[in-house]
Length: 102
Image (cartoon, rainbow, N blue to C red; front, side, top):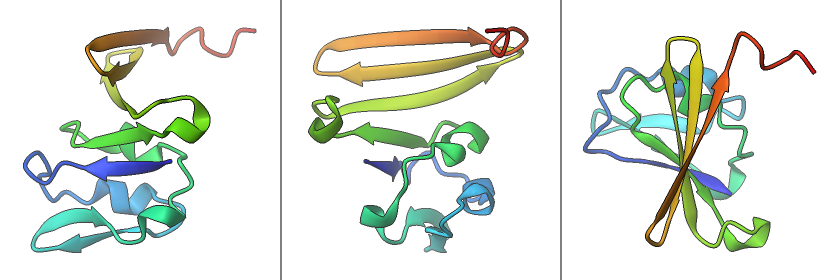
């Protein structure tokens, strides 16, 4: 499990670096990059703070992801987790106001 940072989308705000508990995201050539991908814990904290959706979480085959990619987007009080793989796309929407009710 690891993240991938799309350099063409990155706006160099470095919010992701500030959120990474492992201090794995650094700046190179003015853009964020994952310094040691194999050390990524897969916590997805960086996905949640990226304002432009430049970060994807790669779901490897070892956890049943078969190479899927997951992205996160916040729309008001709705959190949207989108999982894409070969030709398929699934979005899970969670209302943050009621996500802890159970």
